[in-house]
Length: 299
Image 1 (cartoon, rainbow, N blue to C red):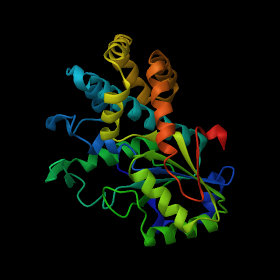
Image 2: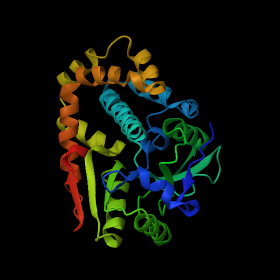
Image 3: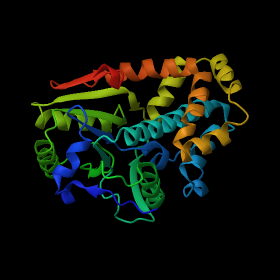
Image 4: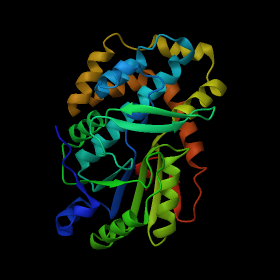
């Protein structure tokens, strides 16, 4: 399925978008599924073309106990990102997906240039086509979803050009509040919050900690400091045998999301710890017009 969502540049009929503005709010999801598709240190190179289901399975099937818990958290975050976007789809709320810059530069392979700890430049081949297919499947190309680009590939900063388009959209659709979710808290989400704070201080801006995502580096840091070996073993022991079937069904059919909830409830202790850590990290995002809330119910 090809991604056919409109960009901010091609958004002209603002009257058609007004019914999707619920309670005066605009959702912005920063770099959705970035860790799943672009942080591939924990993925085998032959798995680059895998679907999102397969990517989550790869994380959960990791054999290395030293990194197993990190992979579980990465899988849980991906599940959470999916359910958050699916919930937005069901609520039919106006939402912008802030994607990495030049996400369509080459739909088959994108040269991702990052920095290692050395720091030496590394180049990864990213299958952007799979990424775009995943976004089209999850959003169903519905008109309440729009696309914008971050200024750079690896930051969430929003360029002046995109800010100008965003201002036009916000003014034309009478938006009074902006909610931010996605990732990473310790990077792109913070960058996006800062960009919005500079230009939209006349609006209420909220970071929703329960819908935020940690970078792989932050997950590693958290696990090394906060989770004991006994806790890891107890978490591993509660994975249901039929989880992969539940996972595939849930990703394909929204009515099966409750099966996800059962799985998440089985990992309740880990989830509580992660959510507390997420909230703590989000509170480090401190800008005059930006407020951190735990859930959407707090708005």
